[in-house]
Length: 188
Image (cartoon, rainbow, N blue to C red; front, top):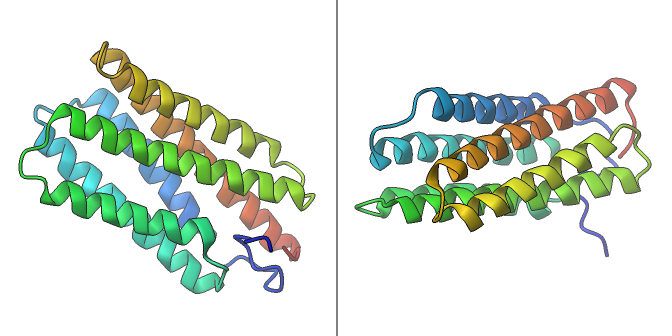
């Protein structure tokens, strides 16, 4: 039995704008990292923890409002909040902890994005090829970020920023697709 993210009997996607909010937040965070490099890992940790909490809570609110079959989205929300709690409880954050925390977060969410785009494509919803493209691209950048972060920290930081931006674009694009489906009242 297939575990769909969208409830096929619902038809309308409420609060599609939460995905838009997450996408905008991710792009703002990535631009903040790019143009205002943080002096300490602790400052970066606080910003990321806030972002992970907001993302996790937004996904839970989205699920509650749409009464969806939770699947990956609930797992992602739990992952976000758990990662935020984990980072808060690590007394001294090192660069390696941050690399693996951020890399794992980006990789997990890009895998969710691949599943989401394949599900929408499988349902015959047009215009979702771009979602699949951005999901694959985000996964690729997360892999590069984790793999090369030890050898070239500057390159890895750029890859993290690019991965956040690409995943943010995916979430914005996904929200616009959900809004379009809601306007057309297409049953998912």
